[in-house]
Amino acid sequence: MLSGGYFEVMAYLSDTSPQAERLLIEGYRAMSPGDKLARVVALNRALEQLASARLRSKYGDALTDEERRLRLAALRLDATLMRDAFGWDPSIRGY
Image (cartoon, rainbow, N blue to C red; front, side):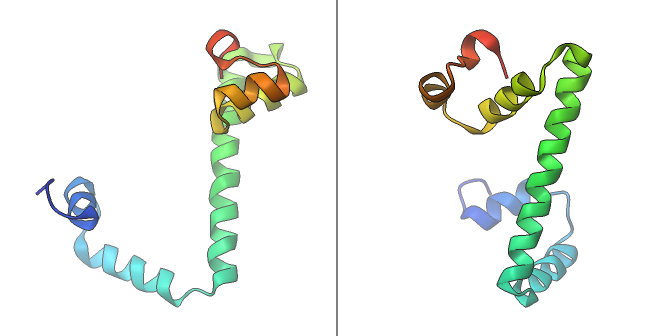
């Protein structure tokens, strides 16, 4: 099964029933481009909130706002860009 196409692989790895997945895909197809973009923005915001919660859990109040922003940026940006643009080396300072 894993040698098949992308959707075969995803179906193999998914815990979503085929019926539910069809409904989900139909719903996405019915959405306007603006609604799809709003969904992406909301999901990105949720991911940032989860990452921020992880940082608070790991470092508590020890992080400055700037350090929190740099650690969040290091999760999304290339390490070379982080070093060159911000002087932040994720391999040394972490994420």
